[in-house]
Image 1 (cartoon, rainbow, N blue to C red):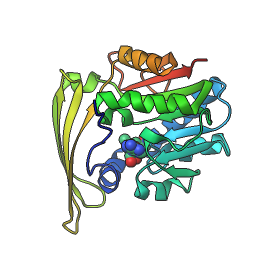
Image 2 (cartoon, protein in one colour):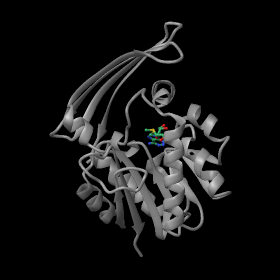
Image 3 (cartoon, protein in one colour):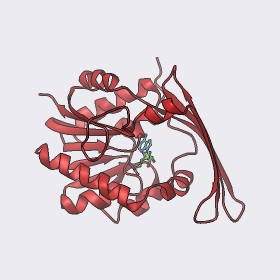
Image 4 (cartoon, rainbow, N blue to C red):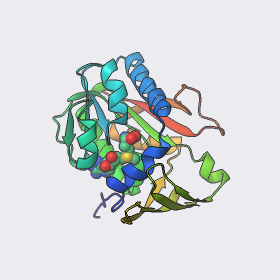
Length: 247
Ligand SMILES: C[S@@+](CC[C@H](N)C(=O)[O-])C[C@H]1O[C@@H](n2cnc3c(N)ncnc32)[C@H](O)[C@@H]1O
């Protein structure tokens, strides 16, 4: 079987950055960064920490000052990395072939539904790479959105003007069979330039993460429904899984 490791075509990069950042206020990133630093500290993480899919460095900017010299990012998008490198060392590379030695990291985190944008069969490949690069006893923190909002409202759309004057049009439909939000996003810049992409976000149940992580060599140690550390509930918007590498 050939495993498709392709993410959404034409989404990450300029379209993602222009259309997502207006919806990510600084106080949200502050809280997420504080959560990550606290969890890594409480878990006793030692050594280097990898931000898998660091993007433009949202979390690097918050975590790096708390763990000086210990955090680095990887992403394949050069535009994002151009910003991220102001906050911490970054590497351009692919999740499916991480350019790091075995056991190079004491912890890794992957935020904002990043793993949910791949085909189901590709996720174990990324987790195996992470298991190779995180040393025994090290940590892996995976953030995804809770399926509660799409379950409550399976169809949604947005048509609005962003602060830079671009027009953003998005349609979302939740497919309960595949547990995926299926989205189309179109952005028209003030100069008339047009960008569009179709993509999906897969919502994994906690039991699915437990099985996937167990198969990769990690043991789930906590699940939170928000960055305040509260338990997962029907009201949760986030789903954050913390797992420790066995061995
Ligand atoms: C949903 S964004 C999250 C960015 C960042 N973690 C945040 O929360 O702002 C996913 C990121 O993963 C990167 N990415 C997706 N697939 C990748 C791959 N196969 N290898 C490396 N980076 C990838 C994208 O370029 C993008 O920056």
